Length: 190
Image (tube, rainbow, N blue to C red; front, top):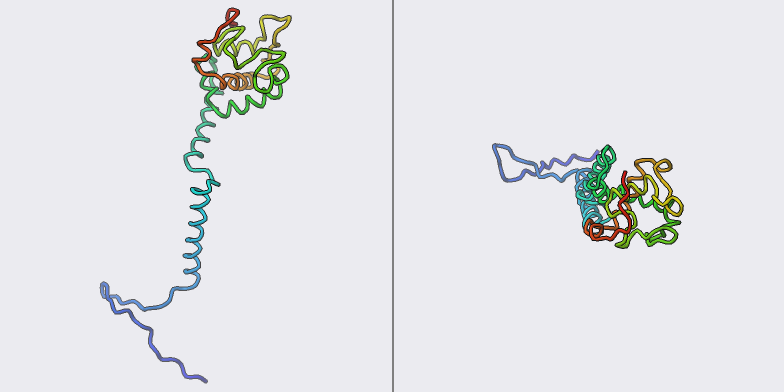
């Protein structure tokens, strides 16, 4: 049998409140946790701030606020020029409206809203009124010119999708664009 090492643990020389500490090495599990936390923080910092792989808190909050605003606008019962402009500034309405436009409107109005069979939707000349509510009414009721105009889309799309496609069209304009646009016929009423 080997003799036991009777060397006492080394005590640090300082005393605080009458307490002396042993000078022992930290346990491995504690050291690995500490080093792992440092490595994780470096990778996280790089991914979040330098490589911008992850969304920032501001981007996450703005995306959630857009969803809240989209829900609020969708729940509004009254459709007027102001609510239509607000919808045209909401990314949720615009992206959903773009999908509907591609599915239902692209054939007549072209991929870039430049027209073709249907009228140009991005120029400064509007045939049936230059107000957002006129555009909304045109999509809902169809063109007043039943022989050569657009069909009514309310029964096919429903109110939510009509709002979204009108928001998409309006997102390509500013209020000043429409106010300065020329109209060749009286505005379409609801």
